[in-house]
Amino acid sequence: MSSSQQAYTSLPPTSQLAGSVPAVVIDQKDTSTVHIPEATLQKLPPINNGGQRQGYQTMATPSDGNGQQFVSNWRGVFSVSSYTQYFNVDTDIVLNRVTSSLFPSGDFFSKIDANPDLYGLVWISTTLVFVIASLGNCATYLMLETSDINNSWSFDVSYVDMGAGLVYGYVLIVPLVFYFLLRYLGSNVSLVRFWCMWGYSLFVFIPSSLLLVIPVEFIRWTIIVIAGAASSSFVTLNLRSCTQNDLPVVLAAACVLQYGLAFVIKMWFFA
Image (cartoon, rainbow, N blue to C red):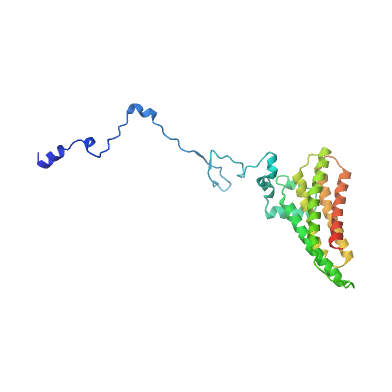
């Protein structure tokens, strides 16, 4: 044996060398007690119509179909998330419902049954307030220009306050009154659907206000009567379809209120 081989064989075991780490020996008898962490399971989402998955959801975060959790108790009245479902509409849906209000057929509740919205109520009411306020001032200016009265004209800002009080008060209070009235009479009606219907019933007054600027009194009264007839027909036909019994007093009251709103708009803003 050479001197180099003798040097290697004379080395002490590695466990006795300074700074060496002893080998870890796993006892076969204790392998049953070794804890293996479980993998975090994930739930595959359902496949949509396009054949693609929408994303992963963990088992610990259940959610509803829209990914939102709505408050079901009375505190939901003060939660914004409780009202998001009533603004889930697109342009096509809004245009379809606006067209239904201009050409009433009595089937509006069947169209909004699956998805009643409050977007139309807010958008149409707010637009109507600014339309009648601005065009009302324009109509006053044109009437002064075509008359022999030499009065100075100034923009009346109070038209905005008057319009907001009239439109918002009408579209919120009147459906609420009819809701409680029909509930008292035994009809199974929905307040959100009433607000939706009355909101869209005001749309006809927006294009009508553009024509009411014409400084001819006979044309103005003709336009407002036609607009009132379209709005009242839309409301009464749909109220008749949702009531269990034919209630002529209720229908007549709704018709009179719609005509009353039309005449108030004419007298306050386009006199």
